[in-house]
Image (cartoon, rainbow, N blue to C red; front, side, top):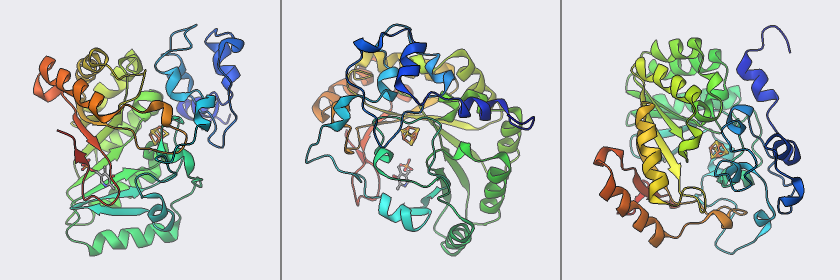
Length: 327
Ligand SMILES: *Cc1c(COP(=O)(O)O)cnc(C)c1O
Ligand code: SF4
């Protein structure tokens, strides 16, 4: 470690990458775990996320999101490598312009955690997806399309970029007159809150355009005190905080769990935005919650929570001009 490495970078570098190390840390007998595979999509779990798991519990809802298990080898014809049809576009450019008025701008293929249910698992992203040439082209594209009003930094996880890179990109977007907002889709405030440094908060606060930050949190246990502190610090600087969750079998497919999640998110300064049905990516069959069950759960949320704490139930469908609302 060099003296210039920040603590979040060293935490990232020392993330768990071997299932046995993580199970050992959690005091779980390795023999009690079902056959572990060593897949193409390696395990990656930062310590601050592992620290939110319950010791000794192989069924912990956070552990289940990140521990590779043999079920990932199950093949099913409805489960494919590119369920939302974005990956080929991504390989060519770093912009996805499918939706009116807004574009996804892909900055990096890397994430600070590897979620087993992610569609990204089947795509060999190179870490440096956005090279200088693509970047110049992408910025030019934004400039030329006056109907684009919002740029969504996505990935991978855009908060893995250095402060300097983020600052540069935000300044580039802000210099384009028709762009009115910048959105950041990131799981980092939840799984690596040390990344939310004062310097990063300053940088976002000083941006010339309003910033909307959409976190990805699936369970109330992910919202530790440290996460709460990081999110409230962002909120204090007028950054709009929203959350998206994925509905996951035996992890959060229950109205009580989701109700607690919404209420806890609110305490962290975050409003629920989307509750996604799983994207059917190869290797994720064991996470599926059927649409009928999802609708029932959503109805219970609607009954038990104020409207502003009920996320919209959606699914992503290839070729559609927006997410599909299920109610
Ligand atoms: C989800 C998504 C967006 C953002 O959609 P919102 O409904 O505005 O959150 C934009 N582009 C693509 C390709 C998406 O998948
Ligand atoms: S953080 Fe998001 S993009 Fe990264 S692996 Fe998890 S779900 Fe996928």
